[in-house]
Length: 326
Image (cartoon, rainbow, N blue to C red; front, side, top):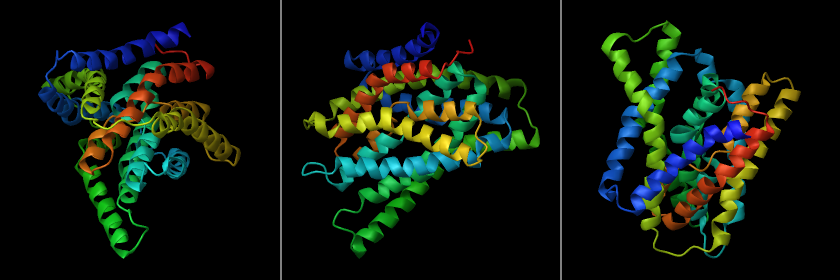
């Protein structure tokens, strides 16, 4: 367990450092979007490109991984919506709550954490999950959020338009393009060299610490703009679904499919389960704000899952007998 904590403590400590920097105004709130943009448009794409260019193409879009992960995402989304709906939480808020219950922080946290914990080969399944969440999970939840009056024709058209906008947003996201470029380099056997390789390596090396610090600042900022008080019963269950139900469902589906003959090595199953056990993606908070959902509730789900994940993720890694590569 001490070896696992030696990896996980620094990761979560950087998130805490970002939150403290925001809370004590060591980093101006106006600087947070710029910090987020640096990670999203420069550092993280370079890191994903480096990982993607160094592994076989089929590991970046593994059909067996998708066969486990996509059905699990769909089940978690509809389960979280069903659990969340009440007189205070309508369909729009329930849909975004389901998104944070199903969408792990694989980009900013998962890729570097799992690579440090298990090895660089873990990034293949994680990258496949990132693509599934960007194009499937997000589009589904945004479409559900637009169905607000019982599914009449106007709602159906609004949901369809919202899903198309979500797909457009996924295509505008630099992460899939960085993955695709890495896959192209891998497939063609190409390699960067000279100053280009050095620049990409420097940006990629900055991705992990800056991304984790940014998660903390984003969580602090989301809490500052959450004006409404949210009862614990409206956000704690979604956080627990994310940290407990999601990984258990992924593990169960993976084991069932392997028993049916789907080629899923034990290593891949461990990576998928640990990926599902990550806290909620902090990027959902500004997305919920953009669509007019209750961002206070979403921020509290993300914050709760992030705080609790330090213990739950570390314990799950220990239960799997993970031996950190370092």
